[in-house]
Image (tube, rainbow, N blue to C red; front, side, top):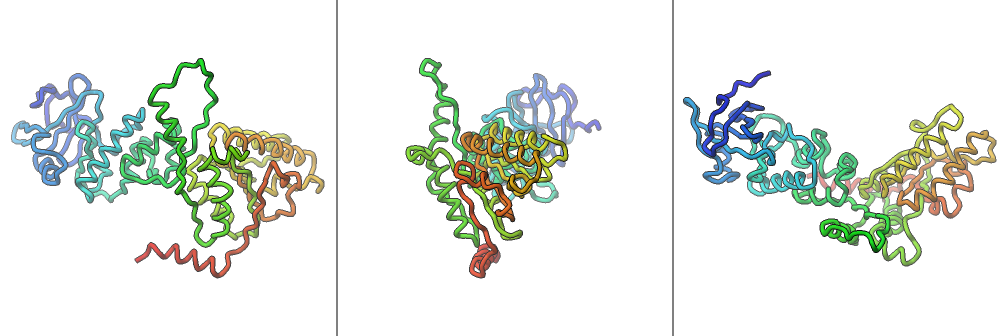
Length: 409
C-alpha cells in the first residue's frame, strides 16, 4: 500500500539531500529514499524533542525543516550506512555491520535504560537506536539483538548456542565479540578453532586473522559447569569434559586430545536428558541427535546410512555434540540374534565413534537398559565412561528446589 508521504519527490532537505519516495512510516516519523541511494529520517518536532530530552541526540543532530504547517526534523545518510526500523532490518553481511548495531544498542542503553527498542529506528550514522514510544508490548534487548542479527528470527542473543547455529557464517569467536559489544555476557564456552597446519612457504595470514586465532586459543579457566541437585554428575562433567576442553594444550601434552565418549544409564525420569541438555547449553556447540524417530527405518541399510549422515554432519560442524538417545534401539548385543541389519548398525557405530571423537565431536549416549548394549560398544576406545544416573536423593531434590527458588522474591 502506498504511503501518504509528507514530502514531495525532489524536496531538498537542509543538509542538501533530496527525497525520492517514502519507504516506511510510523507515528510521527517517516523514512525516505534519497537521490543517490541513501536514506533520510523525517520526524515530527514533538518526537525529536523526546529524543533530545532523553539525551539520545544532541542539539543540532537533526536539522530543522518545514513543509506547509509541519515542523519537522531530518537526518540523512549515504547508501553505505543503515537507516531503518529495527523490525525491518536484514541480517548483516559481515562482522562490521553486526558490531555497528551492537554498539548502537549498547550506546543507547547507556543513556536510556528504560525505553523499549523493538520498534526503534536504527541510525548507524549516529550509533543510536531511537525509540518511537509506541504502545506495543516490550521485547527484551537480547531478543532485539538476536532478531536483528538473524534477519527476523526471535532468538535471544543470550541463547548463544541457538544464535551460533543460525549464524554459522560468522564464526563463534566473532559472534561472541558482537554479543559482548552489546553488553551481554556469553556464558557458553567458545570452541577452539582447529585448522589444518599451514606449510611454512604459505603466505602469512592477515593480521586480523592472526589476532583472532590467538584470542580464541586462550583458555577460559574460570568456567565451571553447574547442575543443580546433581553435584556428582556435575563434577564428572567438569573433570572429564569441561576441563579438557578449556585446557587443550595441557591435556594434549598428557596424550589426551579430546573428551572421550560417555554413556549415561539409569531408569526413565532420572534426569539423564536434562543433564545432557544443560551441558550442551553450557558448551554452546552445535548439537546433533540420533534417536529412533530420526534415523530408524524398516528398509535394509537405510538406518546405517542415516546414522552415517548424522556423524558426517557433526564432524563438519565440529567441535560439536552428538547425543545418542535410547541407544539400546541401535546398539543392542549382537549375540541376541536381532538379525543381520542390527549387526550392520552396530558395526557402523563401532567404526564412526572413534573417528568422530578424533574430529572433536563430543558423544554422549543415554539408555535405560545398559544390560542390552553390545559389549564391544562399552570397550575402551568407544565409550570410555559409563556413568549410572539414579533417581535424585532427598538432599539432591532439596538442592534443586533451593536453586530454582533462589531467584524468586
